Length: 429
Image (cartoon, rainbow, N blue to C red):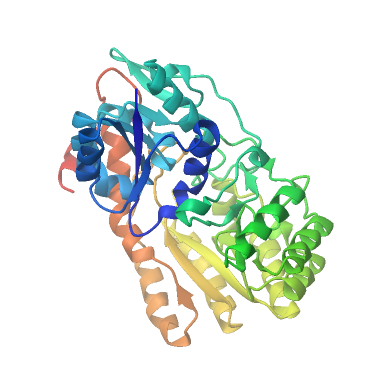
C-alpha cells in the first residue's frame, strides 16, 4: 500500500509533530510523502488519494483541542484512516475510537506511529504496533506497551524546519492528582543523555535556532535521582549549549519546576549560563490541607522558602496557583489568597489557572466548581500591581465541558455509560 501522511495541527503548533515525523522518516526513509496542515485536512487527503496514495491523517489532541476538533475528526474518520494521539487520546482513548479513529496512541508516540505505518503498508491491523488502543468488534484493546529510549529519536526535522523544544525527560515520580503526566502509559521516568542533548543543540544552532529550550515535567530534575537536583548535570548541559553557540533556557516554560528541586547552586547555574531570568515554580495552593489532598508532596512553607530563594539570587519567580481544586473549601481559599498577597507584595509574578478535570487522572470525575468570589475580588485588587498572568477565565469556561466528556462516557465499555445524575447537567452546556 502506498501511504501518505497528513499531520493536522492547530494554531501554528506544528512543533508537537517534530518527534513523530522524525520517527516516520527514520523508520521508513523518505518514501512516504508527509504534509503538515493547519486547516481541515480533507482536501489534502483527497489530493493524495487522487495520486494513488492511501492518506493517513494524524491528530494530536489535548482535551481543549479535542472539544474543538471532535466533529472534524468524526468526518475525517468516515473517509480516511485516522490515528489520534496526544493527552486526551491517551487518557480516554475510547472517545477517539468511538469517533471512528483507526487507532489511538496511548504511550510513546514515536515507535507507535512508526509501527502503525508499517502495519498499514503490510495490510495488518493496528494491534501489531506497540502503544496503541484499537477496536475489535465492540471491545477495546490496548497493544503491548514498549517504552522508547529518548536517545533513539531526534525531536527535530530539518526538511520541515521543525525545531521544537528538546525533550530531556519523560515521565514523573510524583502523583499530583490533577496532572496527567504521572497517570498515563508513559509515566516511567527516562532521560535523554547529555551527549545526545548537546549533539541536538548543536544542530539547532547550526540551523539558526540559537535559543535552545527544553521540555521536562520538572525543570531542574535533569539526570537526577528524583529527590534533589543534579547540579553538575545541569551545569554541564547549560554550559555545553553555550559552547556550541546557543542560549539555553531551563526552569521557565516548558520546563517549569517543583520546590524540591530548587537550591542556591542550581539557581546560580541558571543565572550564570541560562537565557531566562524567570523561574516557574509550582505552588498550586496556599493551603497545606489541600496540597496534601491533591498529592503535591510539599508544604506551603517549603514552597515559599524556595520562591524567596529565587528572589534572593536575583531571578524572577513565576508561581503557579490553581483555583477550584476538588475538595477546596472557603478556608483553603482564604489561606491561598493570603499567600498570593504576600508573594505579590514581594513582586513575585502569579500565574493563575483553574482546575481542569483531565481524562486519565484521579480527578477526571470531579465535577468542576466556579472560581470562588473571593478569588475574583483578590484578582481585581492585584491587577494594578502588574503581577498576574494566566488563562484562568478561559479554563473556568471549558472545565465543565471537559468534565462532561468523561461524565457521559467514562470508560471503555461497549456503549457509553454516563455517570448517574450528569446527563441533565451536561445537556445544559
